[in-house]
Image 1 (tube, rainbow, N blue to C red):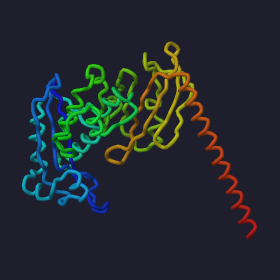
Image 2 (tube, one colour):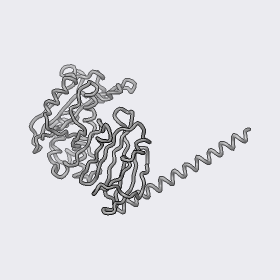
Image 3 (cartoon, rainbow, N blue to C red):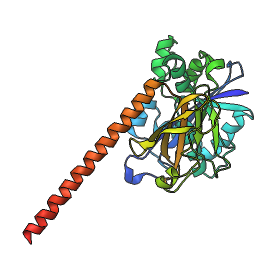
Length: 332
């Protein structure tokens, strides 16, 4: 299996009113580096794409990429011609490696806009090199910029940044320095395409957590009332745990819960609610991990603080409502 280290550059509308809803970002350059199974470089791919939706580059885009409108007019090829050629270059057996999470989404958005068939089956797994570096060097807690990591590794900066093939080359250099045997198992799952039904929904096991991705629901309330979404399985045996703290929210997008497995002890869960690609519904990403007593206390404190704040807010609303009623009555 080969690794396709991908990077994209894109342009957008100057004003929100001019934005094309189905294509907020239009790709203007594809760059990629192909590595073999030993992570040795075997090829590069680079092409400029002539824009059709946003024909003029933003000044900021020009400043960052040093690409000009003249470059695109002179060298650019239309996306619906380039993309099939690029996918052929990728080959048949490969996994994408990208810095961050956005490039694959933008690639698929552009393909969908031009009615190009998506060749990947669900789920589309990829390697987020930024995340893998964070797991190896930052305990997963900090996301660094590509240039920052290049400086930390002391890699010569003999190529410019913010051009697709050059950023892909730098990303490949970082990837080559990672402990792939240890961290490559922490693949990421692309959320552009979601499970179509409950039979496609899956739970993925990683070394330190379980991840479940739901299908799309029209309403957040319907999503959070779904029994499968609200499950809290044990990280080790996957049996449902006895609830210690039921799911509660600190916002409209994050939910937390604690459970206890008779055999394996405390388990903590988190649900993140995300907007689906069509902006017409919502889906959930649930992670489950082993839990310490210290983290249990933090969750209990968070829940109690939120409960107290909501109680105080309801009290203020009730007092205000009584004041308004009294004022109305007095005026009468």
